[in-house]
Image (cartoon, rainbow, N blue to C red; front, side, top):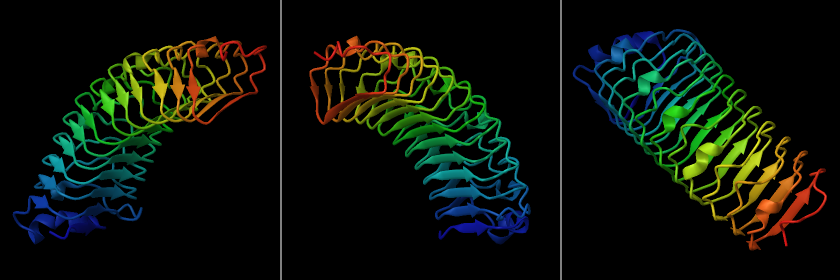
Length: 310
């Protein structure tokens, strides 16, 4: 009931001897050998079907996957898998269907696959995937239909494909996609209709298109599009008619116009258009009626007039 912490392989191996018949743990479960390399497998935990609080697997240098957790179906709290520098896959979580809190997959530098998450259907909190240098796609999330808070996909050097997010239709919190070096498009977000918080598309250097947002109708916070140096168009945002907070387009070096945000008529916060070297026209703003806080249009050296803001 009070949870358990594993710091050695021996503790894991002896779990079923010390706690015969235990299939559920009500408290937090922590698996961490502080990078000693002692923990190499989780086979001794193969009787577990549920952990009703948080599961934290962190700072294990010898663990390559989660084999041993094949019978785990539910995690009632958050699941964090982080700083496991030999970790290559999510093997072992093949039957996990529900996470009540946040799924945090962070700084597992040679993680190459999350495909074993294919039975996961709901996450009560946020989903965050970051610093997985060898992860090329999000295969394994194709059955995920519900995220309760935020979605963050950040700093994944090899990620090219997020198409398995196609069953996500709403995100109650923020959506941030940033610092993904080889991501060219956002196919997979095609069925997303609402974002309750802010939308940030930042520092994806070869991102060409955001047209996958064609079904998006609502952004509850700010919209930030910045440092996407090869973004050619804002096409995909045509169904957005208002921004509750700030709208910022900055440092998108080959963007020539703002087509795609033509139908926005009100901005609750600031409108910022800055340092877009190739931007020549603001005509897409001609339907804008109100800006709540202020307007800043600076450093767009190709613009010769402010036509569009009449």
